[in-house]
Image 1 (cartoon, rainbow over the protein chains, first blue to last red):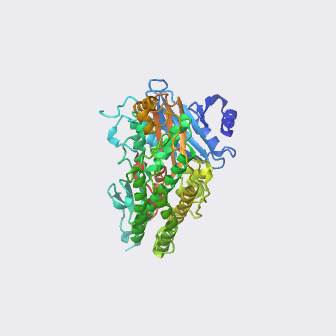
Image 2: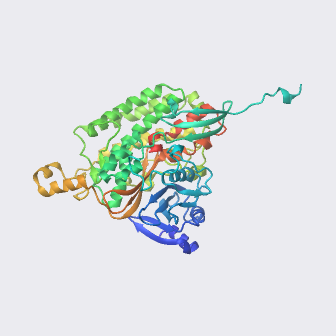
Image 3: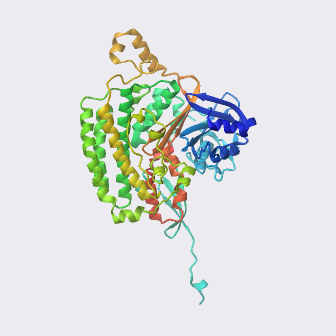
Amino acid sequence: MSAAVEKVQAQFPDEIVEIYEFRGDTTIIIKPERIVEICTLLRDDRETSFRYLSSVAAVDYLPASPRFAVVYHLYSHRNKNRVALKAFLADDAYPSIHSVVPVWSTANWHERECYDLMGIQFRGHPDLRRILTPPECESYFPLRKEIPVRGL
Amino acid sequence: MNGAQTMPQTETMVLNLGPQHPSTHGVLRVVLELDGELIVKADPDIGYLHRGIEKMCEFRTYHQCLPLTDRIDYLAGSANNLGFVLAVEKLLGVEVPKRGQYIRVMIAELTRISSHLFWLGTHGHDLGAMTPLFYAFREREKLMDLFEMVWGGRLFPCYFRIGGLAADLPEGFTDQVWEFVETFPKKIEDYENLLTHNRIWIARTKGVGVMSPDEVLDWGWSGPMARGSGVDWDLRRDNPYSRYEDFDFVVPLGSNGDTYDRYLVRMEEMRQSNRIVRQVLENLPSGDINVADPRVALPPKERVYNNIEALINHFLIIEEGVIPPVGEVYQAIEAPKGELGFYIASDGTGHPLRVKIRAPSFANLAALGKLAKGRLLSDLIALIGTMDIVLADVDR
């Protein structure tokens, strides 16, 4: 069991939904509400020291519900290891989660991309605009499963 | 007259740099707010080259995704292929034989040299040094010839395949790589003679775009961008993949975190890559290049023609592709531009449920606005050059 799992278990026992290992990757599935606190803990704790956020990815599990999940890939330069945090978002129609930009500045563009392509709202994001697609795209989000790959 | 009346009222000006501008290295648009020549605010506007690769992957088999990854960072196609095939192999739980892995390392390091040469030529050219472009492209052209021997093309390799390689190395290839490896260190000296002590080069790069190690981690910089600030991190050494642990190389570090130090880091990285290629050549084992599992790698052609089971295996892989179990993996490699990560979620079918590409250029470019603020307009060109971005990598 990695230090990250132990820390989150000790400090946020009610937030953990599931912990799973697959091919050596550890993923902690958490409830979305306290994502900022959990990220701050993992970043600032001397043992875990996840000071680097590799990426933020949104996944659409349609037709399952809750259909949207956000996955954070964290890396520790001190321990040379990774952990993934994953949160399923309760609302299928208006998925949202708190922004982790206060924890890592790099989250700014990653979260904008998740908003742009999957329509995830990041509450408290300083500048939540479309980033890859033009602003005229209005209310459709290309990576959602109901959007066809061509012929929209 | 008092002073207040003689001072003219000034206001800032908005200037568009790009999306069609030679020094933005592609279709990058930067919306600049200028006070005279000083940058008040720089906002990179990206997405002009967004092709929806992540979306297209969801509608293809894993093998069919591979040519799309060529086009992520088109200056380092093999590096993208390597990241993707390693991620799929991790998902499948297979490991390529030693010879296959060594050849992958050799091609990946030659790709790194070719990518860095392109950076050197264009970065130098942007800042007014014309000669490095010709020198760097001369050697890059040699590498392109070598690549052409292996996969028939220049930029889009598709040579690494899930479970191994498309084919073994062609005859006479290693001799030509030896020739390159022997002569290349002298060429790096030539480049350094042009730039390292050049007063104009130093004036344009020293103290420009300084990032502290803490800022580097906060902004998610990786690769030479992080190492220029003294962040001692290289995925090849720290989380080795494809048997990088068998090779001896030094991870060069900068100390000031400015454009000049990042230049020095990349120059040294070319030397180290050259060293790794030499070690591969010295120790290249014989044997298979593909995994033996017929559900993963295509059987050899002779068997397909003469054996009904092999023919069926061949058809199944072409028609359905590989079918990984349900699960999610993240695999990162040290691409020439930094951490290239593939997050693949599989739902147990022949098509990925989700492919997320963590592109190094995207994360590195995000800090452009922060670095450009308060600098001169001409420094912005140095900053774009030092980031070594490829817009296809940024936009995907």
